Length: 77
Image (tube, rainbow, N blue to C red):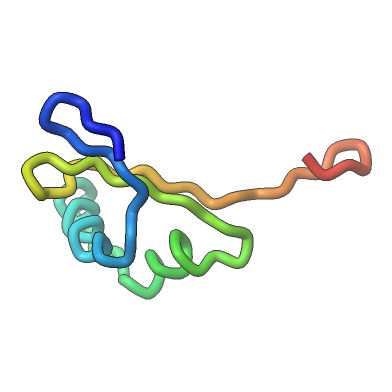
């Protein structure tokens, strides 16, 4: 975990899902289905990672990505 001022940054866990989905709804005024989130950021067949920023026990940011394989000139990058 990285601490900067009052913010903590760490890899997200399954326990963070409700807070991340609340943050998504507040940010985009849309509901993200939990099943879709779990598939994309926890059960992706390609692998994925996610990080949360916590301020006073509340998730205030989330960054996640799915690992993608690229092929260039016959080589996987």
